[in-house]
Length: 90
Image (cartoon, rainbow, N blue to C red; front, side):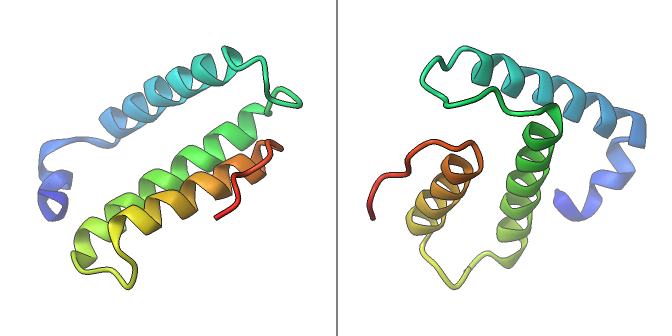
């Protein structure tokens, strides 16, 4: 499906998807009173694109160098650090 998505979705659909997903992330982060500071819109979009792009690339690789659960945990820690929250000790 990933290899054929350009035949299914036009660029405007990708833009709309990221706009809506970014807005959902913004609302979710705005609802987190325990963050040390409100993240900028640029940071929210950067994290969203980095995580979404990495996830899609992992799907193409199929057998990544790390087990999926380890990769997810590390991505979570990256997000927490970027947001200024205290990451859990691994």
